[in-house]
Image (cartoon, rainbow, N blue to C red):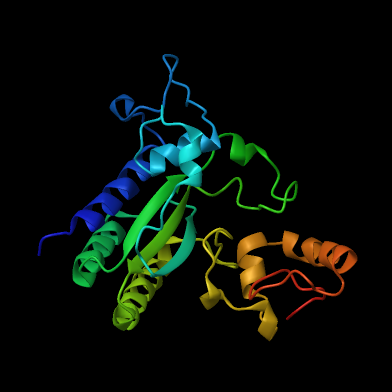
Length: 226
């Protein structure tokens, strides 16, 4: 079966991200003459991801139009050890089987991020994490929702063996209500997003917003949840 362009792109990103832990790819750019990674601004990185020339005025941020996708789902994971060859082959087969209904993208971690203590900021995903994994699916027709959600869940379940555990870490930016909602007394999402920092954030929340004015399905609660 032939891979869709979206699936092929996602698989390529995963491989390059994994290999870049110990290798350099000068043809891909991102390094200066000394082999150091090039830093850039948030605005320039946003231009890159929107596929517009970096010379474009920052005013384009005010003129962005919706992409057209009316439905989406995101999930995330953290890889803490290399995925063995058999595991990668299982991922490729599963993505081919799912027929392009889900994509998988990896971002390498380490460097300066790993030098900061997990407790220094609310963001705890520091040393020990090799890469972040994002699972994503976008669709326009609401009737496709069940198929798309099933696809992303199948891939997520397959990856269980190869990602972090106790808790299974997740990135807050990719909101995933499958992890549980604090509104219903479920703490799993808080531990996945913030690990041990979750308890400190609860204390801060109770002090600055005791009435829980700022809230959503997975917001920090004002008291401990079990």
